[in-house]
Image (tube, rainbow, N blue to C red; front, top):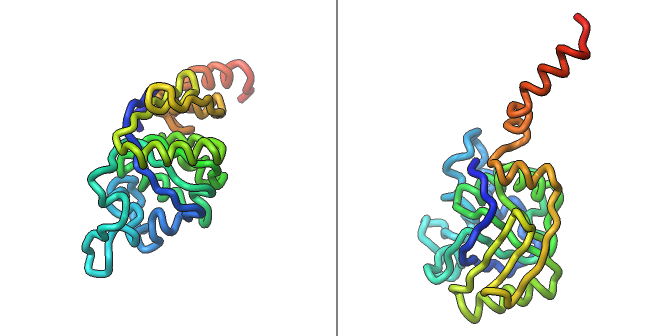
Length: 197
């Protein structure tokens, strides 16, 4: 997992509500235990038809929209708790997902896999979709350090909340296990001082 403090990029709009994890990554692709390769099947049934041909109307097949941010409608990541949904989003290349509401399990899975979910209110989300519609090259500046999201040089500027521990992990590119390993010396010192064999 690679850490980050700031991201400057364009965004891909997906203005649909209640996108569940089975739509993000269909169940038939969950056999692998490696996180690699899931990106090619992100939104598989929306991106490709039964003949495995790209569906022209779907946003990820439109070369106009690119970037490391996915902007989605309310209640993103609902449904089953599969962590593979976060794997697919990250493997595709998204580092940030913006929505007005995330399912709790998806939000935690995203944070544990190096993806920053940013929650904005519904009015701000609408303004973001409008900005991208008017100009697909609209730039987004995400500062994890300062917990700010700025769109098009200040047209939209908000702060967002994030758990301090998750923030530290994202900045340093660590998951929970990596974090514990990084504290090994401290843990061993505590063990030597407090545990009697």
